[in-house]
Length: 144
Image 1: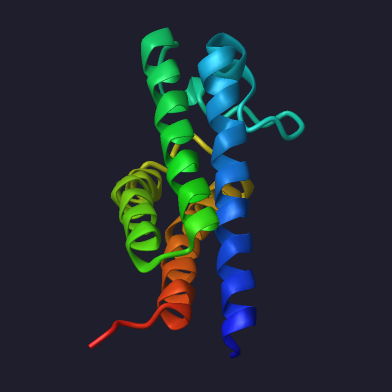
Image 2: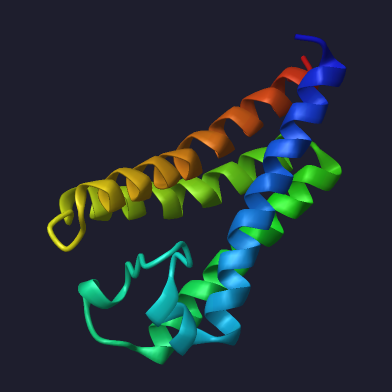
């Protein structure tokens, strides 16, 4: 893969990550009650009420965490350095791995299709930062 392709692909991944979590984060932070009732916002799927009662503080914290992860992805997309990519990827993994583990172990409140959709999307949140970071390291190899 050429450096130009790797650079473009890494940037695109980091931007996609920022847009995805930025949108979710803004929704949760700005309209926590609606986010709780309507997430993920696809048809008649409602993933949060089956997990427990509404808690405005927790929903807002979740939204603000997602905005922070989106900001890390934006920085990585702009500067495209090894350190920025590693920092963004590490932050995403610290959040995404326990998140997917929770949902993999708590499938009972959801239908099979909701579980599959949820776990596929959460898997992307685990894989995308690693791939983006690896692409940046290809573009910006270690100096000896």
